[in-house]
Image 1: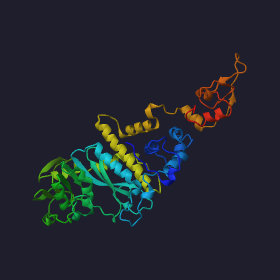
Image 2: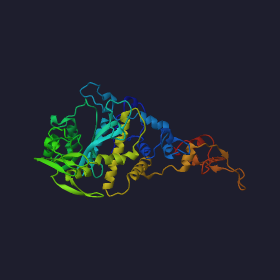
Image 3: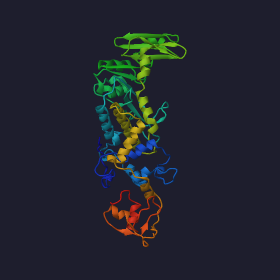
Image 4: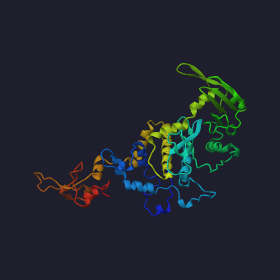
Length: 443
């Protein structure tokens, strides 16, 4: 799915960095591979030290070219950005086309199963940023916060929204004003699924009586842990004292409020469940657990599952440009969603294997052969010409020049390269230089 990248004025004077006229994320294959094979320094990927040597990077492009492409990487035209204080000012202007594109494609390409959830995710970033968040429960702790709507079974991200700061107002279409910021976030993410009978699971940050009632009218059943201080939550349940294993419940039209005593008091609000229990076998006993609590534990972890699948392969390169880090994360998120579609089509294999296939196809499209070890050797090691050794049948020995032959020219030479694995014969001067600097000969 091609993405239109609008060049800035500074980029317009430069030659195309993505190759030809293709409109794609340049270097994506190398960036994805950096998530699989992690190194502490960027230069290590291009190092000729045998400890760090990775031929794929040097054969694909030079480190200088790679850094230049990333330096001039843009997804929108800076000249159309509104100044701070303008009514149409957008903090995410630099990646807004990317956000809109992926949200559209994620929703268009796959219909999630009935059980979905909304939760937060964090992209690690420690630079200066006005809407950077601190979430101690997340491994990254500091970074850019995303709200995700994910399918529980696969972790597929159906829709996402990036947090822009407290001063940014969100007004989804048809959403009541009194729902508050957390309720409006859920409404914005779930609204494309209205009228389809989904079951939504959320944590106590989003759960409210008003939100659950309005979503029920839109045929979205909800279940979530609740804060007893939330407006509308029945005080009668809060003051009820329970022994461990006991529960108390109150119903009001479509809503069920439950208090269950486990190691501590657990409060639930649901428009999906009735006041029933399920037996859970533990190591030493059988526990009667409310069905709402059991289903919440079963279906709430879609966002966490998505984060767990991405975590081993996240690209952790440091940058001062937040939008570059977020853009790379979104492409990795798209890669995982693609893997879900790949699996749903009946294909087998791990997410790692799937990424390896993507990298191979981007590097060597159409099944072209990857650069061999000899190619890497001739490009990145030291080479010195030598005279072809004589034989008894040919005292003044000569061989056909490898570079001239690739160019359709028949020319013999007395010199060859003893440092290359296949000892090619080469004319001194231009042919010798071209053979040890160009990946594809005859060009």
